[in-house]
Length: 326
Image 1 (cartoon, rainbow, N blue to C red):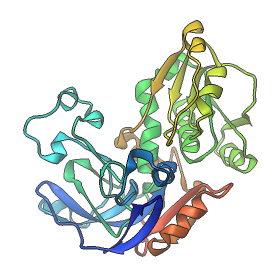
Image 2: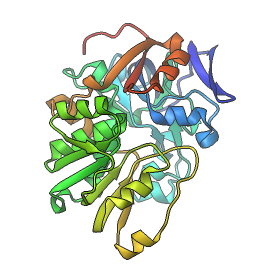
Image 3: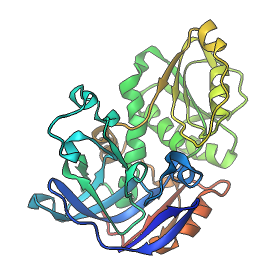
């Protein structure tokens, strides 16, 4: 099969064998894969990952011991925990029901497991979710970042906040704003790029420039930048809540006194639940397709990564085979 690996900060093409089927796992033929900021940060050294990146995908199961999965369109949770690894003795986190923090976890395309920038990938069956028939591949490929946006609904009681600010106007920030908007509160996206803010307005979301002086009780930081944390703290009202979503290679500057003086609650937020994300797609409450800037064939992944980093570009996809209607 064709795949890409990270070597010396660059993507390199290679041919290798299709992964072997493991007990309790499935071999998935990738149909579409998404490029996100984490993939770019991996090339800059994030997690020192040296394998095949890519964790956003929709595919078709081609091999699995449980025959009912064969031919199914699927998306997959990216954290491989004790259950998927076949460990009889589960770690403390898995026993507590928070397998995304499994002591032994591997993460698709990020930590210890080859990802979706390839024609095939493998995942445990327990990580897979069937894609509803009315959800297209172009929508389903957003399931993982959309689930990450839905995680905020699990972590924060939105009923306590009439208004929410989303700091950032990139790919993840756009999905977060749409999920929060669908959940009820008034959402304002703050960003620097007018063309990106215009995408949010088309989805019914209010926008403002990032230097806006208003204070919010809830701010979601999704800039993907080391400067986002400091800026987000300055936007919060006393006793407000800050949700951090950015992951990047490097360190952020932080003065802790505003957190103490203003009694700010800080919530780290990473992966999220796939079921509500797929339900939002199925019910049409969130449509991410306007965020797609361009689709590249898999063999042009190097050019695709370069394009994804250009100013104004939103979601770039890799197509590994002919994408059929969902």
